[in-house]
Length: 427
Image (cartoon, rainbow, N blue to C red):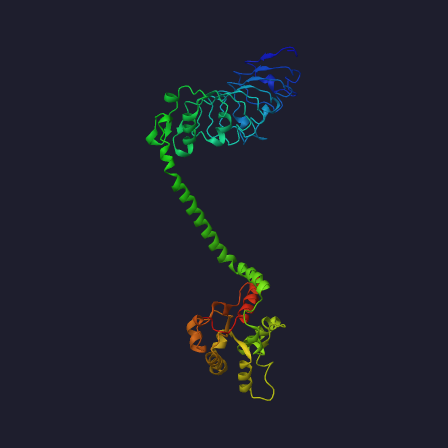
């Protein structure tokens, strides 16, 4: 071999091409290389390194199947990356069932590509994207079932000859509509044997019939159904996601929403005049056993905008206990019950405090009761002991103490909102 030679034919030689460095490196002017009819199974990625002017490469009847598999040890062998000036590539009968997306990358001068008599089934969407100059494409006798625009749109744009017959085509809207439409519209590309060599394999209704018998009008009728399917599927998925989000993260969403609203509008919708009528924002009724909870969870919430009335701490000097309770309830805009089983059994709370609080609410026609549940109390017990039902109050005035510590700030937000609600009845 010498640099003056333009053509090299190495038919029936196998091992010489797998040397390192490449035996072709000293031949930069080589334009034609024939390695067909060998049993070449292992080649190096740099086998064609140095063949910068190679135009024609023949590799038919070898055993390159494993080299282009994604499961190949070390990944696919991209041996064509050194021959970007190729115009003709023939790789028929190599047992290929997979072509990596990068295998033909950069071959923008390629005019003839033959991959016939292989086992190719599904081609990756980007496999032919760089083949802008392709004029002849041969994919005869493979296992191709679909001719999709994502794969073939670029090569078919300039094609003069297409040979893709004797494949088990799937004659369905998804697999064949675009190809049949292209065949009916093209006046440039020659497709030999179109009527008798391009046969449907599936579905059963088109079995062994020409792909040109495929009725594309049936696909147009499916368009509104596909749109409806996509719309309904999106709606169902959105509903499921929303339900799960509300179920597990609803409290957090409400917490941040309350913060946003309250920073903009404030915690209270009560008028300034209404607030000035009272000395306290809420009178707290609780069982003796719940005093520690009130001190730990309620008292720290007091500030310039929120003040509670506690029976022991804020008793009116010089009056009896009963008079002090009545006076302080009258001076409180809200009456807050810390509801537990103990409270419902406390005779002092049931017979006097709860009855007087309810009497004051009815007498003044004010929506001024807030219930904070520390335990899960049945509505029957609540009605029997305090003459109150959950349905009598606004939903925002019924609060449950959270089990999880991270939800305590959200509870505080809800409580401040409930205490800030107006007592005037809404029409």
